[in-house]
Length: 139
Ligand code: CMP
Image 1 (spheres, rainbow, N blue to C red):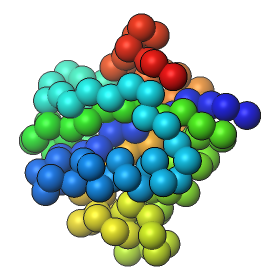
Image 2 (cartoon, protein in one colour; image 1 turned 180 degrees about the horizontal axis):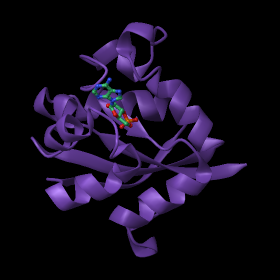
Image 3 (cartoon, rainbow, N blue to C red; image 1 turned 90 degrees about the horizontal axis):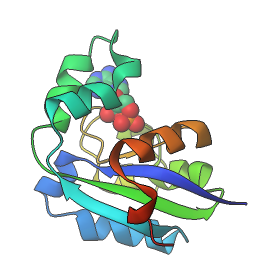
Image 4 (cartoon, rainbow, N blue to C red; image 1 turned 45 degrees about the horizontal axis):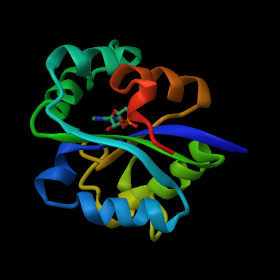
């Protein structure tokens, strides 16, 4: 089933000039980057994006990190894209991530973990809509 997911290449990765290397892992996994934009996330955007984590102790740190340098927001398309991208990213904590995953290859810590990917098709649609319009997505 062809599906879309939402991805963010996070500040720790853009700072280290890893956008192309992360995109290579995504594309080698059979996912297509059908929309992509490099932005500086505003405080308001980051707070809204991570609203579900607002009660967590790391929320403030997470918002501060996500606004600390540019990010690359993306729409990925492919067969079972949500689950496939979660496999490709690896576990949230890079110490637990499998070999060959983006987080095993590049992430620095559980907070600075290089990439975000949607956890469900429903959230993917909401997350995509926060950053893209249908006209931005060219499949
Ligand atoms: P992400 O998939 O973007 O969704 C929520 C983020 O919170 C997660 O990736 C991590 O970057 C971050 N996160 C999760 N646990 C912690 C933690 N213990 N400390 C700091 N950040 C965390």
